Length: 304
Image (tube, rainbow, N blue to C red; front, side):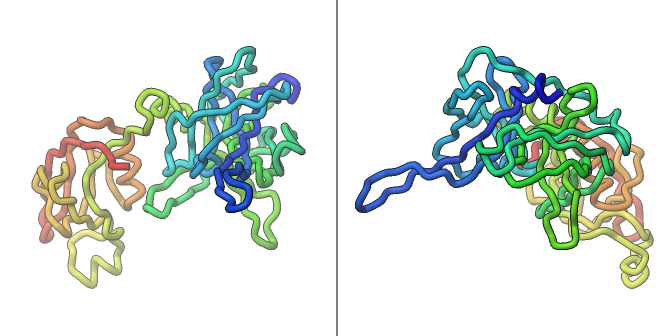
């Protein structure tokens, strides 16, 4: 697996241009990471944080070539990015189906911990957990693969591979706090394929939007204290001029159901909306002043 897939894993050098009073302009490496070639046309998937803020990106190939890359598109929400190089005779990795993974499966991490000096390091472990929840600063949730295959700085954007040599995840983060060992996380390949497809096609990820601010989840304590009439759901405030406001949603409405699916909390709401497409019309049931109101909302596009 290391021999076959190793050349598809590249090193990425994030460089910035600094102006020095004495020496003029000079190039300084501000960070390194890894990437995976997934298309013979030169498309490479990596982490957004690997390429963020770069004035110049240099990709190091297994055969020694160093090629400048351009950013195709980035998605800070999932920490994924696609870059592209113009080069021939590239080794291309195949994606596997991350939904088929089971806890205990062999997991192989390939990447460049510490930069070019340790390029294409291979570490072995198992899938330690599935569907581990990562919540972004914006309150969006994503599910990650947990592994104990060693993931170190510079491994970001590298491949997590199954026993058949298929990429089942893109290594993203690890817990590096004292007392923690062997807790690395990868973005599942099925999520990765959806994201990179949009990045290549649209230069961004197209996500549907309900057009609401999620104030908080409703629980029993909040329901009893405010006599809400329902002890679950999401308390919302529709964005002015957004899809929900246009459909008649009001401030402090409680969303309890979307297209027949019960909405217990904001994560349920995100999941059911993200399963739809921009332009879809959905049925939303809200509780307003203890009464149920059904609204028809045409989904917009989530702003970037």
